[in-house]
Length: 446
Ligand code: BGC
Picture 1 (cartoon, rainbow, N blue to C red):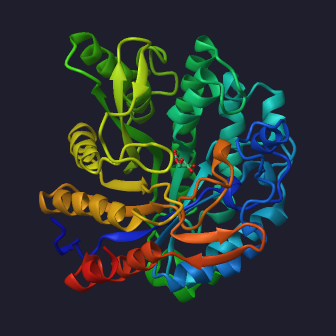
Picture 2: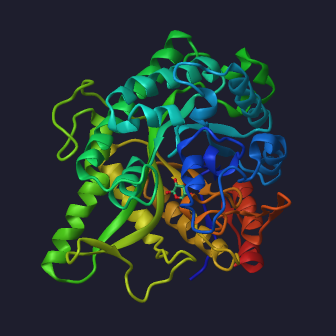
Picture 3: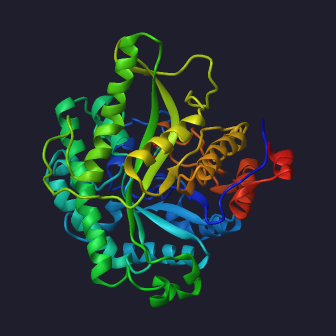
Protein backbone atom coordinates (compact mmCIF):
# COMPACT_ATOMS: atom_id res chain seq x y z
CA UNK A 1 0.00 0.00 0.00
CA UNK A 2 1.22 3.49 -0.83
CA UNK A 3 1.04 5.67 2.27
CA UNK A 4 2.65 8.93 3.44
CA UNK A 5 5.90 8.75 5.39
CA UNK A 6 8.52 11.03 6.92
CA UNK A 7 12.29 10.95 7.07
CA UNK A 8 14.25 12.43 9.98
CA UNK A 9 14.84 16.20 9.94
CA UNK A 10 18.59 16.03 9.38
CA UNK A 11 18.29 13.50 6.55
CA UNK A 12 19.86 14.92 3.36
CA UNK A 13 18.77 14.11 -0.18
CA UNK A 14 20.24 14.97 -3.56
CA UNK A 15 21.82 13.31 -6.55
CA UNK A 16 25.04 11.76 -7.84
CA UNK A 17 26.93 11.99 -11.14
CA UNK A 18 30.37 10.92 -12.43
CA UNK A 19 32.81 13.09 -14.39
CA UNK A 20 33.24 10.85 -17.46
CA UNK A 21 29.49 10.32 -17.72
CA UNK A 22 28.55 14.00 -17.93
CA UNK A 23 31.51 16.28 -18.66
CA UNK A 24 32.35 15.47 -22.29
CA UNK A 25 35.36 16.87 -24.12
CA UNK A 26 38.15 14.77 -22.60
CA UNK A 27 40.07 12.46 -24.91
CA UNK A 28 42.80 11.57 -22.46
CA UNK A 29 41.10 8.79 -20.47
CA UNK A 30 40.66 5.01 -20.78
CA UNK A 31 36.92 5.29 -21.52
CA UNK A 32 37.44 7.63 -24.44
CA UNK A 33 39.84 5.06 -25.91
CA UNK A 34 37.24 2.31 -25.30
CA UNK A 35 34.58 4.34 -27.14
CA UNK A 36 36.97 4.95 -30.02
CA UNK A 37 37.54 1.21 -30.39
CA UNK A 38 33.83 0.75 -31.10
CA UNK A 39 32.85 -0.96 -27.86
CA UNK A 40 29.75 1.12 -27.04
CA UNK A 41 26.47 -0.62 -27.89
CA UNK A 42 24.77 2.38 -29.50
CA UNK A 43 27.94 3.77 -31.05
CA UNK A 44 27.98 6.95 -28.94
CA UNK A 45 31.01 8.29 -27.06
CA UNK A 46 31.78 9.94 -23.74
CA UNK A 47 33.41 12.74 -25.72
CA UNK A 48 29.90 14.24 -26.04
CA UNK A 49 28.02 13.26 -22.87
CA UNK A 50 26.26 16.28 -21.32
CA UNK A 51 28.85 18.96 -22.05
CA UNK A 52 28.78 19.58 -18.32
CA UNK A 53 32.39 20.77 -18.43
CA UNK A 54 31.04 23.91 -20.07
CA UNK A 55 27.50 23.84 -18.70
CA UNK A 56 28.32 23.45 -15.00
CA UNK A 57 26.74 26.77 -14.08
CA UNK A 58 23.45 25.87 -15.73
CA UNK A 59 23.53 22.41 -14.14
CA UNK A 60 24.27 23.80 -10.69
CA UNK A 61 21.29 26.11 -11.06
CA UNK A 62 19.21 23.07 -12.00
CA UNK A 63 20.33 21.28 -8.83
CA UNK A 64 19.45 24.34 -6.79
CA UNK A 65 16.05 24.77 -8.44
CA UNK A 66 15.31 21.11 -7.75
CA UNK A 67 16.13 21.64 -4.08
CA UNK A 68 18.89 19.02 -3.91
CA UNK A 69 20.72 19.47 -0.60
CA UNK A 70 23.69 17.24 -1.37
CA UNK A 71 25.49 16.46 -4.61
CA UNK A 72 28.02 13.75 -5.35
CA UNK A 73 30.31 14.76 -8.20
CA UNK A 74 33.39 13.19 -9.75
CA UNK A 75 36.74 14.62 -10.73
CA UNK A 76 38.40 13.51 -13.98
CA UNK A 77 41.92 12.39 -13.06
CA UNK A 78 43.03 12.58 -16.72
CA UNK A 79 42.21 16.29 -16.87
CA UNK A 80 43.87 17.06 -13.55
CA UNK A 81 47.05 15.11 -14.27
CA UNK A 82 47.20 14.92 -18.07
CA UNK A 83 50.75 13.53 -18.05
CA UNK A 84 52.49 11.41 -15.45
CA UNK A 85 53.51 13.88 -12.72
CA UNK A 86 52.26 17.04 -14.48
CA UNK A 87 49.24 18.64 -12.82
CA UNK A 88 47.06 21.23 -14.52
CA UNK A 89 46.23 24.05 -12.09
CA UNK A 90 43.72 25.60 -14.46
CA UNK A 91 41.64 22.40 -14.39
CA UNK A 92 41.72 22.39 -10.61
CA UNK A 93 40.56 25.97 -10.47
CA UNK A 94 37.66 25.15 -12.83
CA UNK A 95 36.62 22.38 -10.40
CA UNK A 96 37.07 24.79 -7.50
CA UNK A 97 34.71 27.26 -9.18
CA UNK A 98 32.10 24.57 -9.57
CA UNK A 99 32.44 23.52 -5.94
CA UNK A 100 32.15 27.08 -4.68
CA UNK A 101 29.08 27.60 -6.81
CA UNK A 102 27.52 24.49 -5.32
CA UNK A 103 28.31 25.60 -1.79
CA UNK A 104 26.97 29.09 -2.46
CA UNK A 105 23.82 27.46 -3.78
CA UNK A 106 23.36 25.68 -0.46
CA UNK A 107 24.39 22.26 -1.82
CA UNK A 108 26.92 20.18 0.07
CA UNK A 109 29.44 18.47 -2.25
CA UNK A 110 30.76 14.92 -1.89
CA UNK A 111 33.72 14.44 -4.22
CA UNK A 112 34.56 11.13 -5.96
CA UNK A 113 38.24 10.72 -6.82
CA UNK A 114 38.05 7.64 -9.06
CA UNK A 115 34.93 6.52 -10.91
CA UNK A 116 35.98 3.86 -13.45
CA UNK A 117 38.08 6.33 -15.44
CA UNK A 118 41.75 7.35 -15.39
CA UNK A 119 44.45 8.91 -17.60
CA UNK A 120 45.86 7.08 -20.60
CA UNK A 121 49.37 7.40 -19.17
CA UNK A 122 48.23 5.23 -16.24
CA UNK A 123 47.18 2.57 -18.77
CA UNK A 124 50.70 2.68 -20.21
CA UNK A 125 52.26 1.96 -16.83
CA UNK A 126 50.01 -1.00 -15.95
CA UNK A 127 46.90 0.66 -14.43
CA UNK A 128 45.84 -0.95 -11.16
CA UNK A 129 47.50 -4.22 -12.12
CA UNK A 130 50.73 -2.57 -11.07
CA UNK A 131 51.61 -1.86 -7.44
CA UNK A 132 52.89 1.49 -8.63
CA UNK A 133 49.26 2.60 -8.98
CA UNK A 134 49.15 3.04 -5.20
CA UNK A 135 51.81 5.76 -5.27
CA UNK A 136 50.32 7.39 -8.38
CA UNK A 137 46.83 7.46 -6.88
CA UNK A 138 48.06 8.87 -3.58
CA UNK A 139 50.03 11.60 -5.37
CA UNK A 140 46.92 12.62 -7.34
CA UNK A 141 44.70 12.57 -4.25
CA UNK A 142 47.20 14.72 -2.33
CA UNK A 143 47.26 17.29 -5.12
CA UNK A 144 43.46 17.44 -5.17
CA UNK A 145 43.03 17.76 -1.43
CA UNK A 146 45.77 20.40 -1.13
CA UNK A 147 43.72 22.39 -3.67
CA UNK A 148 40.14 21.93 -2.48
CA UNK A 149 40.49 20.54 1.05
CA UNK A 150 39.57 23.89 2.58
CA UNK A 151 36.10 23.80 1.01
CA UNK A 152 35.46 20.08 0.62
CA UNK A 153 35.35 17.84 3.67
CA UNK A 154 33.67 14.75 2.17
CA UNK A 155 35.32 12.32 -0.24
CA UNK A 156 34.75 8.98 -1.94
CA UNK A 157 38.13 7.53 -2.82
CA UNK A 158 37.00 4.85 -5.27
CA UNK A 159 33.65 4.07 -6.82
CA UNK A 160 32.67 0.38 -6.96
CA UNK A 161 36.00 -1.44 -7.19
CA UNK A 162 34.02 -4.68 -7.53
CA UNK A 163 32.19 -3.49 -10.66
CA UNK A 164 35.45 -2.16 -12.11
CA UNK A 165 37.13 -5.55 -11.57
CA UNK A 166 34.14 -7.66 -12.69
CA UNK A 167 33.60 -5.80 -15.96
CA UNK A 168 37.24 -5.04 -16.73
CA UNK A 169 38.81 -8.38 -15.74
CA UNK A 170 36.09 -11.10 -15.70
CA UNK A 171 33.61 -10.32 -18.46
CA UNK A 172 36.00 -8.07 -20.37
CA UNK A 173 33.14 -5.79 -21.43
CA UNK A 174 34.80 -2.70 -20.00
CA UNK A 175 38.34 -1.40 -20.34
CA UNK A 176 40.91 -2.86 -20.20
CA UNK A 177 38.82 -5.71 -21.64
CA UNK A 178 40.63 -8.64 -20.01
CA UNK A 179 39.42 -12.01 -18.80
CA UNK A 180 42.15 -12.84 -16.37
CA UNK A 181 41.56 -14.07 -12.84
CA UNK A 182 45.07 -13.52 -11.54
CA UNK A 183 45.13 -9.91 -12.79
CA UNK A 184 41.65 -9.39 -11.31
CA UNK A 185 42.94 -10.35 -7.88
CA UNK A 186 45.95 -8.07 -8.21
CA UNK A 187 43.71 -5.16 -9.18
CA UNK A 188 41.43 -5.83 -6.21
CA UNK A 189 44.44 -5.78 -3.90
CA UNK A 190 45.97 -2.63 -5.37
CA UNK A 191 42.64 -0.80 -5.30
CA UNK A 192 42.16 -1.73 -1.64
CA UNK A 193 45.61 -0.30 -0.90
CA UNK A 194 44.93 2.80 -3.03
CA UNK A 195 41.87 3.45 -0.89
CA UNK A 196 43.79 3.07 2.36
CA UNK A 197 46.64 5.31 1.20
CA UNK A 198 44.12 7.94 0.06
CA UNK A 199 42.09 7.68 3.26
CA UNK A 200 45.19 8.38 5.33
CA UNK A 201 46.37 11.20 3.04
CA UNK A 202 43.05 13.06 3.09
CA UNK A 203 42.83 12.94 6.88
CA UNK A 204 46.47 13.90 7.25
CA UNK A 205 46.26 16.94 4.96
CA UNK A 206 43.02 18.27 6.38
CA UNK A 207 44.32 17.84 9.95
CA UNK A 208 47.72 19.42 9.17
CA UNK A 209 46.04 22.45 7.60
CA UNK A 210 43.57 22.72 10.48
CA UNK A 211 40.69 22.37 8.00
CA UNK A 212 39.14 19.61 10.07
CA UNK A 213 39.03 21.83 13.14
CA UNK A 214 37.67 25.09 11.79
CA UNK A 215 34.26 25.63 13.33
CA UNK A 216 33.01 26.37 9.88
CA UNK A 217 35.41 25.70 7.04
CA UNK A 218 33.60 27.80 4.52
CA UNK A 219 34.28 30.92 6.63
CA UNK A 220 37.96 30.63 5.82
CA UNK A 221 37.34 30.78 2.10
CA UNK A 222 35.62 32.71 -0.60
CA UNK A 223 32.74 30.32 -0.13
CA UNK A 224 31.80 31.99 3.15
CA UNK A 225 28.45 33.06 1.76
CA UNK A 226 27.13 29.53 2.02
CA UNK A 227 28.88 28.61 5.24
CA UNK A 228 25.79 26.97 6.65
CA UNK A 229 25.94 24.06 4.28
CA UNK A 230 29.53 22.90 4.81
CA UNK A 231 30.87 21.18 7.88
CA UNK A 232 34.49 20.68 8.79
CA UNK A 233 34.17 17.01 9.75
CA UNK A 234 36.39 14.97 7.40
CA UNK A 235 34.37 12.09 5.98
CA UNK A 236 36.06 9.57 3.70
CA UNK A 237 34.69 6.31 2.34
CA UNK A 238 34.17 4.08 -0.66
CA UNK A 239 31.01 3.88 -2.79
CA UNK A 240 30.38 0.14 -2.57
CA UNK A 241 28.17 -1.53 -5.13
CA UNK A 242 26.14 -3.91 -2.96
CA UNK A 243 23.69 -6.50 -4.20
CA UNK A 244 21.54 -9.14 -2.65
CA UNK A 245 22.76 -12.58 -3.72
CA UNK A 246 19.95 -15.11 -3.38
CA UNK A 247 20.04 -18.70 -4.61
CA UNK A 248 18.05 -19.18 -7.81
CA UNK A 249 16.43 -22.33 -6.37
CA UNK A 250 16.34 -24.34 -3.14
CA UNK A 251 19.06 -26.59 -4.49
CA UNK A 252 21.85 -26.62 -1.84
CA UNK A 253 24.42 -26.05 -4.58
CA UNK A 254 22.69 -22.81 -5.59
CA UNK A 255 22.64 -21.81 -1.92
CA UNK A 256 26.38 -22.36 -1.59
CA UNK A 257 27.07 -20.60 -4.90
CA UNK A 258 25.12 -17.52 -3.70
CA UNK A 259 27.23 -17.33 -0.51
CA UNK A 260 30.47 -17.67 -2.44
CA UNK A 261 29.43 -15.04 -4.96
CA UNK A 262 28.51 -12.65 -2.16
CA UNK A 263 31.95 -13.02 -0.59
CA UNK A 264 33.87 -12.71 -3.87
CA UNK A 265 31.90 -9.72 -5.15
CA UNK A 266 31.48 -7.66 -2.01
CA UNK A 267 32.50 -9.38 1.24
CA UNK A 268 36.25 -9.74 0.78
CA UNK A 269 36.93 -6.37 -0.82
CA UNK A 270 34.96 -4.37 1.74
CA UNK A 271 36.59 -6.15 4.69
CA UNK A 272 40.02 -5.58 3.15
CA UNK A 273 39.45 -1.90 2.40
CA UNK A 274 37.87 -1.00 5.71
CA UNK A 275 40.25 -2.83 8.04
CA UNK A 276 43.52 -2.87 6.12
CA UNK A 277 43.80 -6.63 6.64
CA UNK A 278 43.56 -8.26 3.23
CA UNK A 279 41.20 -11.24 3.02
CA UNK A 280 41.25 -14.33 0.84
CA UNK A 281 41.40 -14.30 -2.20
CA UNK A 282 42.58 -10.67 -2.34
CA UNK A 283 45.67 -11.22 -0.24
CA UNK A 284 47.10 -11.79 3.21
CA UNK A 285 48.50 -9.57 5.96
CA UNK A 286 48.12 -5.82 6.25
CA UNK A 287 50.67 -4.16 3.92
CA UNK A 288 49.64 -0.62 4.95
CA UNK A 289 48.76 -1.44 8.54
CA UNK A 290 45.51 -2.31 10.25
CA UNK A 291 42.95 0.33 11.18
CA UNK A 292 39.46 1.62 10.57
CA UNK A 293 39.64 3.21 7.13
CA UNK A 294 36.11 4.57 6.67
CA UNK A 295 33.98 7.31 8.18
CA UNK A 296 30.71 6.24 6.55
CA UNK A 297 29.37 3.17 4.81
CA UNK A 298 28.74 4.16 1.19
CA UNK A 299 26.15 1.98 -0.52
CA UNK A 300 25.28 1.99 -4.22
CA UNK A 301 22.20 -0.19 -4.48
CA UNK A 302 20.34 -1.24 -7.61
CA UNK A 303 19.22 -4.85 -7.65
CA UNK A 304 19.39 -8.50 -6.64
CA UNK A 305 21.16 -11.43 -8.29
CA UNK A 306 19.65 -14.90 -8.45
CA UNK A 307 22.67 -17.18 -8.35
CA UNK A 308 22.89 -20.55 -10.09
CA UNK A 309 25.58 -23.08 -9.27
CA UNK A 310 25.47 -24.30 -12.88
CA UNK A 311 27.86 -22.06 -14.76
CA UNK A 312 28.35 -20.05 -11.54
CA UNK A 313 26.17 -17.34 -12.94
CA UNK A 314 23.95 -14.43 -11.98
CA UNK A 315 20.37 -14.58 -13.17
CA UNK A 316 17.19 -12.62 -12.51
CA UNK A 317 14.46 -14.04 -10.24
CA UNK A 318 11.62 -15.19 -12.47
CA UNK A 319 8.36 -13.23 -12.35
CA UNK A 320 9.80 -10.12 -10.72
CA UNK A 321 9.44 -6.46 -11.80
CA UNK A 322 12.30 -5.24 -14.04
CA UNK A 323 13.68 -1.97 -15.36
CA UNK A 324 14.62 -1.17 -18.98
CA UNK A 325 17.91 -3.07 -18.61
CA UNK A 326 16.14 -6.12 -17.18
CA UNK A 327 17.44 -5.49 -13.65
CA UNK A 328 15.07 -6.69 -10.96
CA UNK A 329 13.47 -3.92 -8.88
CA UNK A 330 13.83 -5.11 -5.30
CA UNK A 331 13.53 -2.31 -2.70
CA UNK A 332 13.52 -4.68 0.31
CA UNK A 333 17.10 -5.53 -0.62
CA UNK A 334 18.19 -2.05 0.38
CA UNK A 335 16.64 -2.50 3.81
CA UNK A 336 18.38 -5.85 4.30
CA UNK A 337 21.80 -4.64 3.16
CA UNK A 338 21.72 -1.53 5.36
CA UNK A 339 20.82 -3.60 8.41
CA UNK A 340 23.48 -6.15 7.68
CA UNK A 341 26.26 -3.66 6.95
CA UNK A 342 25.40 -1.48 9.93
CA UNK A 343 25.66 -4.52 12.17
CA UNK A 344 29.05 -5.39 10.69
CA UNK A 345 30.60 -1.91 10.46
CA UNK A 346 28.78 0.46 12.88
CA UNK A 347 29.09 3.74 10.98
CA UNK A 348 26.65 6.20 9.42
CA UNK A 349 25.20 4.93 6.16
CA UNK A 350 25.11 7.07 3.04
CA UNK A 351 23.23 5.73 0.04
CA UNK A 352 25.74 7.02 -2.48
CA UNK A 353 23.73 5.75 -5.50
CA UNK A 354 20.26 4.35 -6.12
CA UNK A 355 18.18 4.76 -9.23
CA UNK A 356 16.78 3.05 -12.28
CA UNK A 357 16.82 2.95 -16.05
CA UNK A 358 13.36 4.04 -17.20
CA UNK A 359 13.31 5.89 -20.52
CA UNK A 360 9.55 6.47 -20.38
CA UNK A 361 9.63 7.65 -16.77
CA UNK A 362 6.90 5.10 -16.17
CA UNK A 363 8.02 3.70 -12.83
CA UNK A 364 10.87 5.92 -11.56
CA UNK A 365 8.70 7.87 -9.09
CA UNK A 366 7.40 4.64 -7.57
CA UNK A 367 10.96 3.26 -7.48
CA UNK A 368 12.08 6.33 -5.53
CA UNK A 369 9.09 6.07 -3.21
CA UNK A 370 9.70 2.37 -2.50
CA UNK A 371 13.42 2.73 -1.78
CA UNK A 372 13.02 5.78 0.41
CA UNK A 373 10.17 4.08 2.22
CA UNK A 374 12.61 1.28 3.15
CA UNK A 375 15.03 3.94 4.39
CA UNK A 376 12.31 5.51 6.53
CA UNK A 377 11.77 2.09 8.17
CA UNK A 378 15.49 1.84 8.89
CA UNK A 379 15.56 5.33 10.42
CA UNK A 380 12.60 4.47 12.63
CA UNK A 381 14.53 1.44 13.87
CA UNK A 382 17.48 3.66 14.78
CA UNK A 383 19.79 2.63 11.92
CA UNK A 384 21.69 5.85 11.08
CA UNK A 385 20.98 6.21 7.37
CA UNK A 386 21.89 9.88 6.88
CA UNK A 387 22.00 10.57 3.15
CA UNK A 388 20.41 9.56 -0.14
CA UNK A 389 22.05 10.43 -3.50
CA UNK A 390 19.79 9.53 -6.39
CA UNK A 391 21.46 8.10 -9.48
CA UNK A 392 21.28 10.29 -11.40
CA UNK A 393 20.60 13.97 -11.95
CA UNK A 394 20.23 13.75 -15.73
CA UNK A 395 20.45 11.18 -18.53
CA UNK A 396 24.13 10.70 -19.27
CA UNK A 397 26.74 8.54 -20.96
CA UNK A 398 25.89 5.16 -19.40
CA UNK A 399 29.20 3.33 -20.04
CA UNK A 400 28.82 0.49 -22.60
CA UNK A 401 25.10 1.23 -22.94
CA UNK A 402 26.02 4.68 -24.27
CA UNK A 403 23.37 7.39 -24.35
CA UNK A 404 20.43 5.01 -24.72
CA UNK A 405 20.07 3.89 -21.10
CA UNK A 406 18.26 6.68 -19.29
CA UNK A 407 18.66 7.00 -15.53
CA UNK A 408 17.98 10.74 -15.21
CA UNK A 409 15.59 12.71 -13.04
CA UNK A 410 16.04 15.12 -15.91
CA UNK A 411 15.64 14.13 -19.57
CA UNK A 412 18.49 15.17 -21.85
CA UNK A 413 18.32 15.70 -25.59
CA UNK A 414 21.98 15.00 -26.42
CA UNK A 415 21.80 16.75 -29.80
CA UNK A 416 20.63 20.08 -28.40
CA UNK A 417 21.79 19.53 -24.79
CA UNK A 418 18.32 20.61 -23.69
CA UNK A 419 17.50 19.50 -20.11
CA UNK A 420 13.84 18.83 -19.20
CA UNK A 421 12.81 17.83 -15.70
CA UNK A 422 10.82 14.59 -15.65
CA UNK A 423 7.72 14.08 -13.52
CA UNK A 424 9.74 11.78 -11.24
CA UNK A 425 12.30 14.60 -10.97
CA UNK A 426 9.59 16.92 -9.66
CA UNK A 427 8.43 14.29 -7.21
CA UNK A 428 11.96 13.80 -5.92
CA UNK A 429 12.41 17.56 -5.71
CA UNK A 430 9.37 17.84 -3.41
CA UNK A 431 10.83 15.04 -1.28
CA UNK A 432 14.17 16.85 -1.00
CA UNK A 433 12.43 19.94 0.36
CA UNK A 434 10.03 18.24 2.76
CA UNK A 435 11.87 15.03 3.72
CA UNK A 436 8.52 13.33 3.39
CA UNK A 437 5.84 11.98 1.11
CA UNK A 438 2.37 13.45 1.70
CA UNK A 439 -1.12 12.37 0.57
CA UNK A 440 -1.04 15.21 -1.99
CA UNK A 441 2.27 14.00 -3.44
CA UNK A 442 0.93 10.46 -3.70
CA UNK A 443 -2.13 11.79 -5.50
CA UNK A 444 -0.04 13.92 -7.85
CA UNK A 445 2.86 11.60 -8.71
CA UNK A 446 2.23 7.97 -7.89
C1 BGC B 1 27.82 3.20 -11.43
C2 BGC B 1 27.32 4.32 -12.32
C3 BGC B 1 26.34 3.78 -13.33
C4 BGC B 1 25.17 3.18 -12.58
C5 BGC B 1 24.05 2.65 -13.48
C6 BGC B 1 26.73 2.27 -10.96
O1 BGC B 1 27.20 0.97 -10.85
O2 BGC B 1 28.56 3.71 -10.36
O3 BGC B 1 28.41 4.95 -12.92
O4 BGC B 1 25.92 4.73 -14.24
O5 BGC B 1 25.64 2.11 -11.81
O6 BGC B 1 24.52 1.62 -14.27
